[in-house]
Image (cartoon, rainbow, N blue to C red; front, side):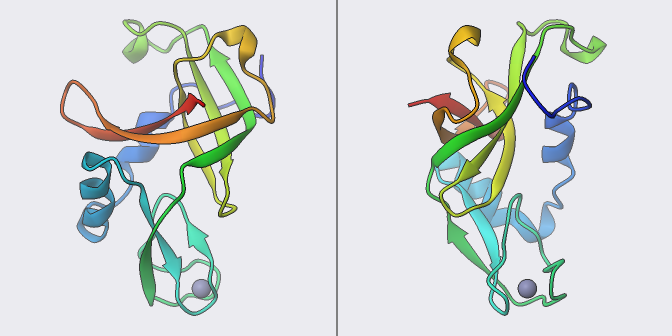
Length: 143
Ligand SMILES: [Zn+2]
């Protein structure tokens, strides 16, 4: 059942909600436009995803916004067949960690792929979208 993601099952939406909205407005606005922005430390060059207001490596607060490419490769994934209570109305879903061309790792749902086709090393694209409920989000899709 995938590799390396034993505790991830219900976390994806929680992670998104934990991004402080005040300093990441551009990120949310970008998702609505189909673009994925994140922050890069001007001092040491570290790229963060999701965007961070401060650099956890060199403690600088001098961050700049960059637009990420959407090309990614799956590094790990898990099929969530037994859903936590809040997700019972969802079909079984896949949560994956993909590494973008820029080197940042992104945790997101992987949609639109047959379970049997999903494997480590699979090329995917990171897609910004707005849910039917109007929430900006992002997910991986097969290329
Ligand atoms: Zn830094």
